[in-house]
Image (cartoon, rainbow, N blue to C red; front, side, top):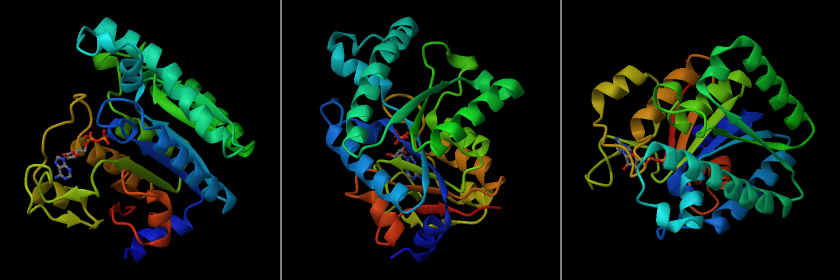
Length: 266
Ligand code: ADP
């Protein structure tokens, strides 16, 4: 039981949920549409409870590869960006199907680093987020990979979701990954790694754990999740890291039956 997680979740009204590529892809590399439909059902439940939700969805590359399979091995940056352009359409098409089964509309926001640096653009994004949510629509945010590369990009959706949560003045940021939370070491390589359930001081956490390498897409890893927590918690927004492959994870976090790592607000 995690009462702290359940309490934080119940108290939060404005919630940003980020879903990692590992959660959106099946082992054979195709899109996990069952997950998407189940997730949309859980979002409907949150909305019915009076909560507001913004989604940050990775997975454009995975979706692109599931369409143009022969591009899977092309590492050239132009191909990767083109793959994201193809995949983003497919990704949103699947999300649209999943949410329409719940009688919910979605809206797409593709953002870049510059959008957050420029006050005028940030204000426009913030206003769009507020308008969509007020009208009962679920905004789905992703990085605009086709225009942002390398030093111009945020680079990972953990940091993008943190910036989005701050911009929207969210009450809680939830990151869904393929692990239950932050461990003392990479649980995929060290079976003795211990789950850390609550983090009060991020610097102390950094000093006490081992951080493994990034995922197969070369982005993210646990490091960017900690960076996201560093960003949001100073703005008073707690961050919850949990396992997207646990069945009904959002319901489980809400009722306290699911595990995770809760980074407390500063
Ligand atoms: P996502 O695509 O969901 O954002 P990532 O693959 O980028 O997920 O990051 C999660 C991965 O980070 C885990 O699957 C795990 O292998 C790795 N990792 C490395 N070090 C740790 C650690 N100390 N605790 C938890 N996970 C870790």
